[in-house]
Length: 276
Image 1 (cartoon, helix red, strand yellow):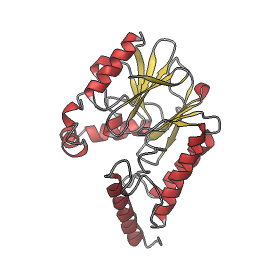
Image 2: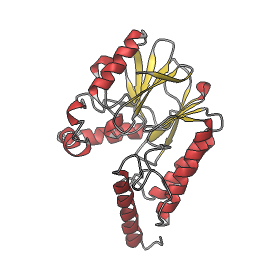
Image 3: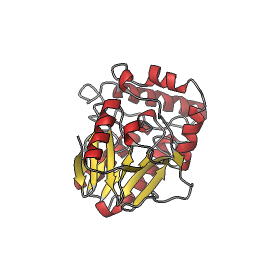
């Protein structure tokens, strides 16, 4: 079910990791950001938009991870965008004919795998590298690209509505998950991305993370600070005092992600001869 979080901005939350699809009303229809995960949920979203007489006129994927690249035929054939680097990463990965089978077998949780439609996965167009806003006829939406969670990851600032769509950052249920494969310094990349979001957050009233609960104005800086503290702890190989990790965490598997990040960074430091 669609829920309004700001004027002309609605969300539809999936059962899977509290994934948030974002709908932004324009003049001729809506922009759909990260449309969802399970097929029946996206079909529900399509029906809700049909009832509102709001066709999807454009889509946007915040980054090239499978759960942000899905689509449903009921949503129509509108152009779907991503940053240039995001789209290039998707093209490279989808060039392997076995990639969808691997996603279904190894990345999608078994309890929902049969409900996730992969036929329209990743059919996105990369915007030119210097593009600073989404090309559509609705409110101005600024693209804040950075290299933190994934190649070409983008947060979106809906300036007229005071809404920051953060992609897979600033979640209250998931820790910062660094891009450990495509960057020379994942810690500094993540800290730089948090600074970009902090710089953009001055007039933000609503925060929409890719996963988790919607945050009000007072939560924006609190979540930036929480993510920064976690990354500092990770950098210094310290135990983070973070409720998203440990026995009381919303998702038990997040502790495993934390341990893998620690181990990866320790191996990198040992290989490079750097402290910490």
